[in-house]
Image (cartoon, rainbow, N blue to C red):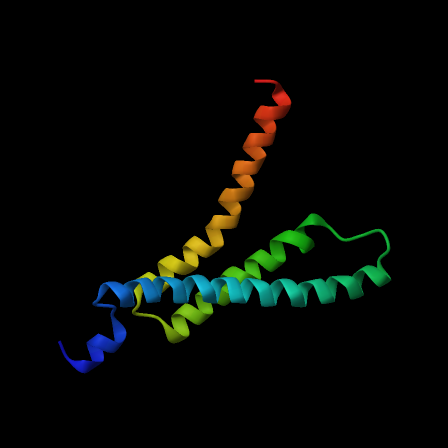
Length: 113
C-alpha cells in the first residue's frame, strides 16, 4: 500500500476503533453545539411568542440540522473513511433507540402486563 491509502483507510484494529470513535464524538459534538445554539435562539423566540412554539420547531429542526452537519463534515473531511460514517450513524440513532426503549417500557408498565 502506498502512504496515501494508509492515511485514508484504517488498516489496524486500533485505527478502526479510533475512526469509529472519531465519528461518534463528532456527531455528539455537532449535536451539543446545535442544541445549545437552538436553545439560545428558542429562548429569544419564546420571549416574543408567549404561547410557545410548535413541536416541529423544537425537535425536528435541530435534529435535521445535526444530521445535515454530520453529512457536511463527513463529505468535507472524512469521505473515504467508512468507520467514521458508521460512528456518526450510531451516535445519531442511539438516543432514538433509547427513547423508543423507554417508551416501550412505559407502555408495558402502564398497560398492566
